Image (tube, rainbow, N blue to C red):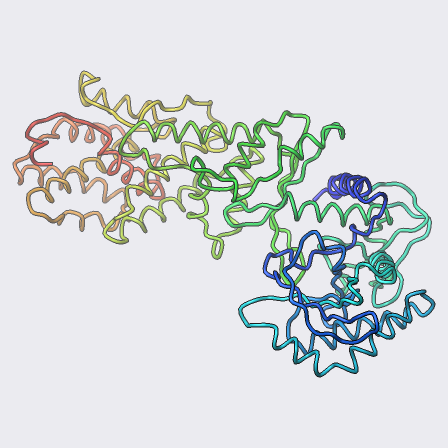
Length: 591
């Protein structure tokens, strides 16, 4: 991740905050206690102006009250920065978050003008400790999540100067305190803005890429307090980084087939940042209409319309115990690349929609998620996304092996219920990769197919029809062995159709060995299929059988197709069978 780009987002947010609040930068450091949308109720421990405990007031969470709640999370097992906390167990939260915070504040700010008020608040809460905890228990149920805070004389925590000061100071301290000791460098260069500053900090790790708790992360003799040498950050950049991360979390954090990523714009001219950010607003699942299946389709389409004065980083990550694990960082993707990705996907889907048989099949990145599930093949999914976004080259053997395994699984599952659907999707995705130029990259560019139907009425012979089909298919049928395997798949499906029409069963399917076919099996299948058509007195396809024989003879022993490819080409023949119209009265009656 290029942190300078995140800092630019932070600077933009800082300008907006200063303009809105008249210079008050408190909003920089305050967190939303309901950022995940599940803490929707606030329990207010209420005291009157005479410091008498009144009771628990139950209120609905208000986003416009974030500065009043003044929530800032502290250490996991310690107090938060202010007496506003997310409620877990009533007794634990009240003692360790509310009372402990007030005690810590009194110790740290003995000379503050509001310290007497805080002391009296603490006394009242301790005197009524048992009653308050019981009142909290009586105000909650197990189905909901709550925020617990203190309210004195109608004033919220965020209306006390002492807590405002504490949040600001403690936030800055967190950038350099490690084990309560300072990690600072004097008159050193900031690693982000590249300027020499009076102080640089050693713990401004806003994104939690690493930890100074482990030896291997720290230079200079493995001393934690020397961590500023590894990643020196000045105060301005630390603040901008934190603001930039907040902007990413709130506006530019998306999902790509269930995987979290940040979309980070990088501008050639900073003056265009507002325009780009406006283009990227409201890109989430709530804005998907019927034309799109997935959020990433909308995102890619929107990005394709941006001019090439900007590039984008797509930063894929997972959060584990507050640590941010980098899964993939694709840098400097041009809008023109997004344009190509979107337009070619649209072309493939328009081909499928040209036929009533395949019009409901859509090629998009959900197929890649099917091929490489997150639990088992997430690395392959991300590597393929990187190849597509970065215009690299995908290894044919790698992709075809996974596609064939997927097709074989669908052939043998639920009596082949999804065999057609998944074969055609696989075919479409390979065509998509070919159009993008990431498959067979060394070969010439090809024209996209125009249709998903081949009717004998438009050709002089069946041989001409099939040759046209092969020529249209974007370099997938460049050799006679591939054509032969396709035709045998086509003939096998015709035979299965015939058997089902006559017997209501498909006994020949057992001869296909669950689609785990070798070259030897392919050569065996041709005479077997020929004999079966003779047995059924249905010799409609002698010319196609002859064409398959011709291709097998031309291939001889020098096959270019490997046993990795055979299931794909055979399945394609079986499933494109319904897209090939060979008008024959007797065949129509039997098929």
